Image (cartoon, rainbow, N blue to C red):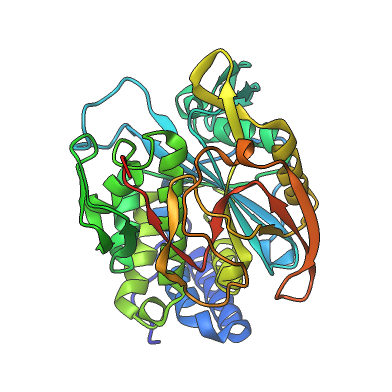
Amino acid sequence: MRRSQGPVRHARGGSSARSAARSVLRVIAIGVAVVVVSTASLAAILVHTLDATVVSHSITLRAPHAEPPQPLGGAFNVLIVGADNAPDQHGFGEARQSTQNDVDILLHVPADHRSAVILSMPRDLVVEHPACVASDGTKVPDGGEQPLNVDLDRGGLGCVVTTVEHLTGLSIPYAAEFSFEGTIAMADAVGGVPVCTDRAIDDPDSGLRLPKGRSVISGRTALAYLRDRHGIGDGSDLARISSQQAYMSSLLRQAVSGDTLTNPARLIALATAVSRDVSLSTSMSKPDVLVGMMVAILHIPLHSIALVQLPTEPYPANPNKVIPEPALTAVLLQHLQQDTPVVLAAGTHGYATSVSASGSSGGSKRPTSTSAPTGSAATSSSPSSSSSSSSAGHRSSTISGLSGQDADQSTCSIAAGS
């Protein structure tokens, strides 16, 4: 793919510094292209696009761990945060006094890069909030026991990372914060995301209107689908997570398809969306790091990417909130801490999704189910795991009782009242 001959912009430095930086970026792009031919165009475009724009609004994570290693050298963890009511957002409903981290997703890629886990944590999950440090260096005191979504307002992205590290026992050196505009831009960049519903949805609260069956959504419709609660399942945040998982799996399938990787316009739009509408941690804003991550993820078979929901049970002090279900959560987190691939049990699907008539996109070896769960996975089955061999040829472990799906599974959101 032919690259633009225009100058690469940098935030500061003289002509010699700019020349050196350009040389480094060229080396990175060439190196990635040589090692990974199938994503060379993506690497080149990202390296060319991720310049001072990314650096100018990157966020410093003042965590106690040292500068993270390059992601291609081992395991890596990335926290993806969706911000509701960000200060510079307009036209998305009534403004509120605080910005909340309403979407909290942890991506874990083991050292062998043969599998991945995308872990969704409910915004209403009540957990301990330890002392943390904001990106400007301000020390934030211990927050006690509160819902997870208070951390952006409490101390910014760094405090969200600290709380999730405390919850999971994992070091998380990388993070990304999406605004509503960023969510819309990503959906538009790939030409829309296919989703499915078992019945028509018309929810005035979120503005979501979808017919029964398959739709390709983008723009504000994509945002409404991801935010919708009252039109999906029982109206809970757990049901909303199921739709988010269905959306993310479809987005992954769309991203690795030829329609995206061989389409220069979509590649440029995708890179532009990342550089303009997503705030990356400074550790992640380096082009070689981000390109390395994307290359690693794009080479993981879709059936080896598990999208799971943190197991929960009702919070005794407030039934509208949830807490981690101890036994099953411990099993899941032990898998992540020990780099053991997570394999979902036969029939696993989301809290408010069912497997669509088209089944999976190919490659999944798990039997599928056509019925929705009647309750949370934590209460519908006891925690257990059994050893098995994955398609990648390495040992893995099946975990019974989780709620979620594989990335190659095509699922349908269950409309409220179904």
